[in-house]
Length: 105
Image 1 (tube, one colour):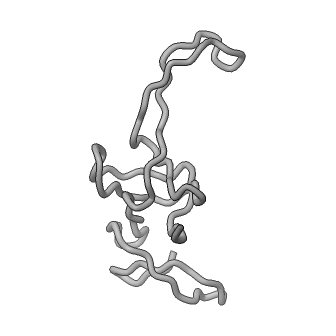
Image 2 (image 1 turned 60 degrees about the horizontal axis):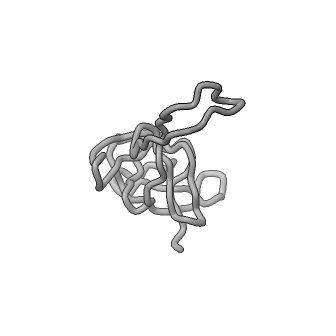
């Protein structure tokens, strides 16, 4: 499985599927499955029985995981969906770099 360049809290744009073009924040990254959960994207409904946390039960909506290959990271400085490069940062650690504008993030 290739390394994921997307982390929790990153802003991403959806590249394919029913939510193509939508932008949202990554709520959860699942690197061992190569999937991410994005806020407001791939919303599914699930019927649940009443329990301690949800006294009433009913139909609950939540975001499903989508493949990481279907999202592109949005550069915070130029605001465009971009591929990610890697370079040595100012503190000597490896940093992610925008392929379009060259900004580090």
